[in-house]
Image (cartoon, rainbow, N blue to C red):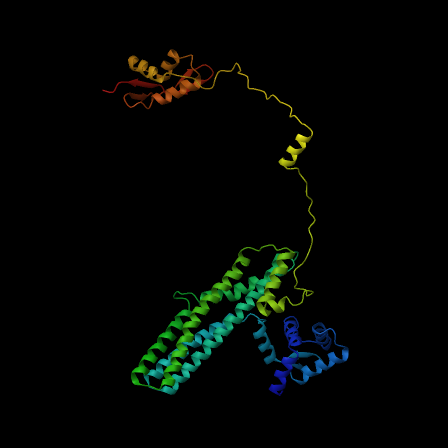
Length: 419
């Protein structure tokens, strides 16, 4: 077993190398000596081969790197791997079943708390409260780690090569949504099917009721303080769970519903934003020659020079330029019949009133005002039908009326004075 102080000091001394090896472990479960030496050289390229070997031996002696039995390959210490992944936001996406099991354990701890209060067993009450506090801490930690893991999946999908097939590019995103986000949404449903909020509400209610009973009984202040702190953790976990579920859905749902296309620039920006989120702005942008740097290019664009009105006026005055008069053609009146006719509609209505009753309104208009255009006669025919003081009756059999240029098939309208 390694000395904890030596391990922590080795982490402090070779942190950049360990961080790179942890990222490399997401692709290779077991590392060879050449891979580790290449990682050391990549972090500190100025070191020679002897110094790089010394760094490798220091990592092995500090138990950061462990040798595998029956092999010369190396693997990272599980505790170191978990610790560094937690600090650098490099966690893998957890299992929804583990989160559901921890949520189900909240109900068991709540029942133990209620039984302890009924039996006045303070040891069981404190044990149940400690178990609830530990469950709240584990669930909150897993939610935070899974949130960053989902962000990592989305950033990798956005920063991937646009020439990659869409099904391969978004495969991990779709699997994460189907196997994690969707079960988590079902668990955090506020309805009767959801267990997350319901079990947390039961735990909050039990903790608050136990705190009130202990206050009435005059229990020790340390016991009441413990229950109050655990109740605050439960309330905070409800808020944090709702926030994480919303952020995960907002991040993955657009990628699931619409597989967007990205060019080289947006891919580099998405990758750089992911590095800034995990490392900070200063560390992410400290190496301009890094592969995460934004692409730089130059765009050649032609331009055209034009003279302004002031320059034109000066040049015209200097050359005594006189603009040539151009006569624009005028529209000559044609021989066509004008489109609009002036009609004395009041006289026509008075003439029709003297001629009532009329058996066929359109024939009457054509016989007395045949000089008018067909469009004008039809307009008068429709307008006169809406006169309020007369009575109009349409015949059941249609008839044909020949005007100047058209023949109209219509039902004759009889016009008479209402009785």
